[in-house]
Length: 598
Ligand SMILES: Nc1ncnc2c1ncn2[C@@H]1O[C@H](COP(=O)(O)OP(=O)(O)OP(=O)(O)O)[C@@H](O)[C@H]1O
Image 1 (cartoon, rainbow, N blue to C red):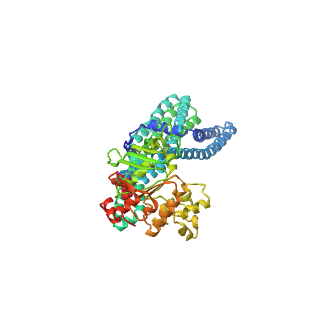
Image 2 (cartoon, rainbow, N blue to C red):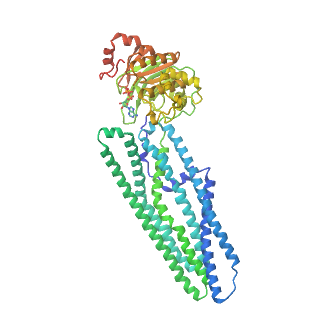
Image 3 (cartoon, rainbow, N blue to C red):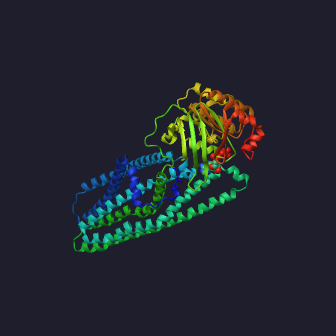
């Protein structure tokens, strides 16, 4: 139950064919769009090639007819040229529309799929990844996967069909030419792409890795810009960005060099093909085994074949980066959830008594136990404070209660083990105000309504008063429609905490867990808040985690002291506050003096 979550960055190298097949599997439901896009790409390419070949043939025939004075039928080829021109232009337009529609649909599906796989991993399974890295996988890596369809599958299909047609035509007119063409086609269409793919794998993966490092450094630098400026370390941070940029540039230079070499290689192969047509075609003209218009047509067809082959080496060189992105996405998606949902969840009970026995929790296989045998009871309707020095494990206890982290020992809710509950059912019965509550970049109303999307104005008003926020909201010109900014930058720490308390109260859960709810509040507001919470939670359970002793007796019946991941005593609040003076108790609970009176 307490296995260390695997680090997604240690993903084993999976073979590219498997990765591509898995990507295609995820495109299920949009394969019709993908097939239509591929069919249109073929139609427009073949129309273009047909246009070249028919025009060349027609112009040569006209020239010969003009020279010899013979009459030829020019209506049919002229009509065919017009038709092919329309098909090429219209086909190209429709191809762009449909292939992009297909790509966007597949990417949207991939993103939703990946997000769905991430949800059960949070927070325990994502501990090794920073938010910028996660964002990078959800956005940049998923976006890079479009190359698999637009840059690899379609060009490969088009090149296969086109070279097949060109070889078949050559075979029909001049079999020896078909044999010769195998050489430049093999060079430009098979050897160069293989070489480019092999050489492009390492720099491609470096490009992806450096781009992620740069995004992470930029995001970190922006978030921590005040600290960097304060300690004068902007230049050190800038140097790390510069180092990552240089590595990225070097890798890009390598991929560009590969593209240039393979582009030159394909151009050379195209020349070889044309030379071959002339070398074998001209003698055939003399022996009249080939007509002059057919020779023109074969020259143009050979050139057209290389228009289809030209994108292959570059596509294969970029495949390294695409595969690196795909592997990172799959490695993340395949991380097993650290907290496993039960196969047959227990039915929801209506007794909300919590009982904790021999609870142990660590944040990784090699990490120490931060909870090491906690025994604690919170019967229905009771209110308990857990106090103790910083690092004692108080917040970790909340993580275990919410089934956010795997644990050993037992926690029962209404007599039923918590690990037989669905995580969502547990979280519907326990509302939490976190130590660092997160506020979304949205209005105050939106931030509150996360707990209850259909909350009425009356319900909102009630919890705002209970959380001692009414004065603050009344002072806002836009009231509940006030924007709180990214992670609540436009509200103070104390206001953010009270918004989180109002949000938790709105959830109307039978158990309320408050982690340092009075942090950032003055003594008067804190005392009023405790009073209001005591009234709001009458008959329901409260678990309060705090360093501050002031006003405790208003809210809680008992105080449990935690030290080194264990509850060392649990006594009625009056006893706790009465036996020793506040100062003596503070030093008893925390050698560092972190448990304080307000
Ligand atoms: N996500 C995490 N990953 C690894 N270690 C963690 C994590 N969260 C907490 N810890 C460690 O667990 C120990 C207990 O932390 P916890 O936050 O539970 O203590 P606390 O009693 O709530 O402290 P405070 O009063 O300062 O909030 C600490 O040593 C901390 O470093």
